[in-house]
Amino acid sequence: MAERAAMRAGLDGQAVLVAVGVADAALGALGAAVGAVRELLGRADGAELAEQAGQDLAARGRLALDRHVHLPPAYLEVLARRSQAAREAGGGGA
Image (tube, rainbow, N blue to C red; front, top):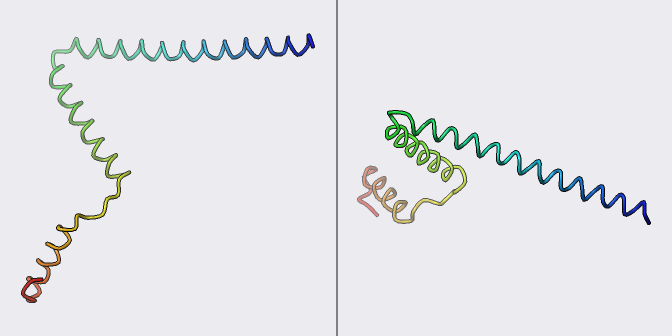
């Protein structure tokens, strides 16, 4: 019984150490991010960088949507294309 309690205490201690390690890593990453933001804010072309970052994020968003969302073409768009193709083929329209 004492052996089991000691093992449990060891596992609890290990879990605490892992949690503290994760928190330390997160704080380190946060500190690095804050340093990078301070560096960017100190630049003279900060507004231009912010605009470029916004454009880059928008482009990434469009790419992500295109990659993950597969919507069928709009029904009216399909009809318009068929009608145009029929007119071009000399069928007179649909």
